[in-house]
Structure formats: C-alpha cells, structure tokens
Amino acid sequence: MSVAQHTIRRGGTYHLRCRVPFDLVAVLGRSEIHRSLGTACPKEGKRRAIRLYGLFVDIFDGVRVMAETKEEWLAQLAAMDAKSRADRIGELFDLATLCVKEAEQERALREKRDGQIREMGEHLGYFIGQLADSVSPERLALLEHWKATFSALTRDRDDLKRQRDELADSATVAQGAELISAITRRLGLPLVSATTPTVSQFLNDTYAKERRLADDSHRHITNFISLFAKITGDKRLADYTRTDVVDYVRTLERLSRSTGKSPEDKTASVKRLLEKSVGKPTMNATTIGKHVQHVKGFFNTARKHLNFTTSDTIDQMFDGIDLSDFVPSIQKRKIWSIDKLNALFNTPIWQGTFRPRQIDRPGSSTCQGGHVTVGP
Image (tube, rainbow, N blue to C red; front, side, top):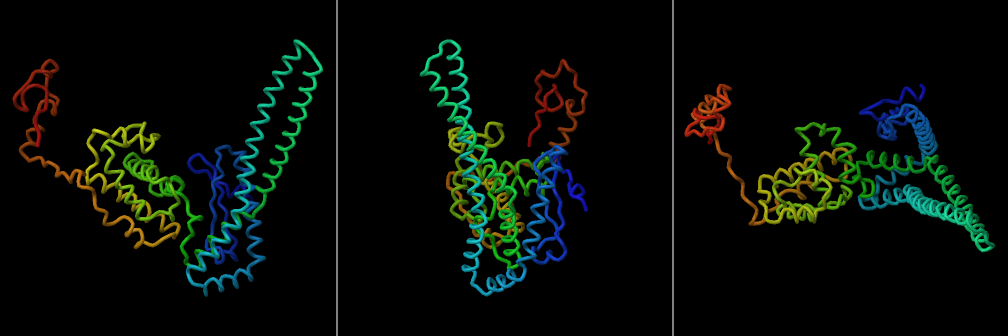
C-alpha cells in the first residue's frame, strides 16, 4: 500500500495514519500510529509523510531484530519492584532523549551563527559602501578579514545543518519513545515524569479535540484549564502535587470574578491579573468550585490516556481543600414566582405591542410604559 493512501486531512492539517504490522501489535501494544504532519500543503504533506513513514519502517525492523532480547528484558522488569522498574525505564528514556538534547544545543548554536552571519553581512555592506568613497590598504585588509570570517561562519552553519539533517533521518529518538511507551503499557506501569506532556500540551493536542472544546458552550473549560496552567507554571502532568493545587486555589481566591472575560486576560501574567483584581469583588465559593472541578476532570482524562497516576491520587490532590474565610459564600439564586412570570409575559415590550414614543415613559407597573419592571 502506498504512503499516499495513509495520508489524511483533519481540520486543515494533514496527518499520517500508519498500521502496525500484525506480528508487532502485541509487542507495541497498538494497531495504528497517528502523527500530525504539521502542514496544510498537499505537496509538503506528502513529502513529510514519506519521510515519517520511512522512520516507522525502521522502527518496526528494529523491534523485530530485538524481539527475543526484548522479551527477556520484559521478564526481568516484571520481576523487579516498582521503584527499580521506574528507574530502569527512566534510564532508557534518558538515553533516548540524549539525541534530542544534542539537537536542541545544535539548533541554538545554529541560530547564534545565523545571527552572526547576518551581522557580518551588514558590516560587509557598510564597508563596501565606504570603500566606494575612499580606498586604503587598511580598509582593504579589514574587508578581507570580514570576508574570511564570513566564509568560516558559513561553513560552520552548513556543517550544523548537515548534522541536523542526519539526526532527523535517524530513527533512534522515535524508536526509543515508542519502545518505552510499549513497555510501560504492557507492564501496566505509570509513566515517568519526563514522558508525560505539560498541561498546555495535553489540552491542545488531546483534550480539546476529544471534548470538542471549540464549541462556544465549552470554551470556558479551556479558559479554566489555561488559567490553571498559567498559575502553576504549566508543569508536566506527573509532576503536580497537592501543594500545587492548594496554591492554585489560594490564587483563585484573590482573583476578581470577571477574570478571563477580557481578551487581555489571556496574555496577562498572574501578577497582572492580581493587580487588576484589587478592590473588585472576588470569586465566590461556587465559581472556585467549578474551576477546581473542571481541572480535576482534566487530570482524570489525562490519567486514562497516559496512565501516569491513579484516580485515588487525583482525589487526594483536589478534594477537601478548605477555602479562606474572606471568600464569599454560595449565594442562593432568586426564584421567579408564577405570578411574576405571567406579569412579565403580559408586558407590552414582551408582546411587542408598545409604541416607540412610549418607550421612555415611566410607569409604576409592568403594563405601563415601555420598560419591564418585573423582578423576582
């Protein structure tokens, strides 16, 4: 089957859908692998799909080669205690991510080199302009120096680009991540901290799509979880403790009840939100409870996907947090009586029978003037 038949389009972005070979389904613990290609261009999507599919084929071949050794190693892990297993898996993940760290260092160095090259280019343009006016041996020598430096930096940049491409073509990183995930699933182990995504990553990559949070009726859930990530520092899911949740609740107690309704609040820092809340009515117990409830539901959904903790641990993190004394208590909603509702429905403005010239005429009852004066 050609690679193009595995390429699908979702939400304007192309994805690669790859079936795991039948003989490796039990080993990897999954029958399909989905990966976003990160582009909406058909031509670029096809090119990336071919490259990514090649990496998947390398991973499958590597798993087949090490199948016997891997089964023995799985048996050894199963005989270990929980802490030893977690340590071994953590060591493997560290080895798998070593290439990623080196790539990040090379990327930072490459960006620095590119900046220096741009600066050199500006200097060259400046000196060439100066040479057009007056030529001297000193200026010519300085120009030659800049040219030599520029050429050296260009060679360094090309070398870094070549190393980056070679690393990208290697299946080491992808194979390491896939094997670690497969091992943890087969043994029923919780994921180590370094393998879990951050709150924002899981929200945008999985939770928002699964819960269809793009709908207007659910958009407030995204705001609740984004505010939690902003207050707590957007750590990895497995790194959160009850202390983080308590600090989060204490911060909510000092925020105004209108926090999150302004477009500026999405980009404002926590310090700025607290400054804007000074002197304004703060969140009451009901609002804080809704925030905590949605964040707890978010963690439970992440647990089902990633198996990084237990439901009891999540309950211990979020349940039983007492609010401060200054937090406004739960306010009982006023209930409309049947008589008041009937009076409201009989008003001219509700029935559409009022005259435009009477809309500003005051009245003492609901049937006079254009204004509705009914209330619970």
